[in-house]
Image 1 (spheres, helix red, strand yellow):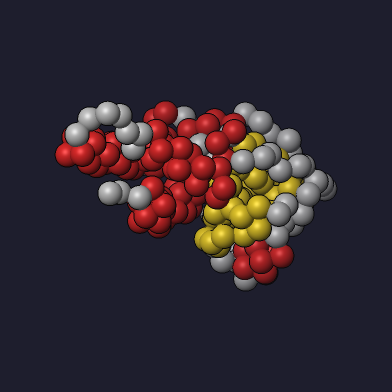
Image 2 (spheres, rainbow, N blue to C red):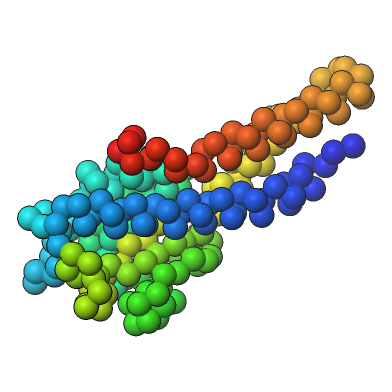
Length: 206
């Protein structure tokens, strides 16, 4: 018989990789949209793109967060100045909070992108982050902040377990029919997850 924990363990690495890829694509996409507003710069305690003040932004971040199903944050230096999170991605992160020390080291000090798992407020998250650099191209400037995309691991594991349990729920049919239906349910679920992880045509949706 198929065991739900065994299926969960087999599917989870694929899901986790997909979430990580989606988060990395989301930070790249947000960076692209910010630069479309104009050159990025720091103005006192404000993060500005062109004429647009990004502190407290809940319009651009909300559109991309909803399209990707993730949480997104903007940082000026290591301080969070804008954030939006979908319910499926976890709890919203408070404005004025500070970035994880590993993000500060990798993204701000080294100027490199980050992809991995971090503990945020006692919960494990898949996180992708990249430097936010001043100017239109950023080639001659160091990071003035960073972009972060995140997904609470417990929430997505719970969704996976629920979907598997629902899809593998048995009835009073023969063992062969039950086995076939279980496999079909798993395949439908995996196909659905793969579709949800795609960022194809995301720019058009936004």
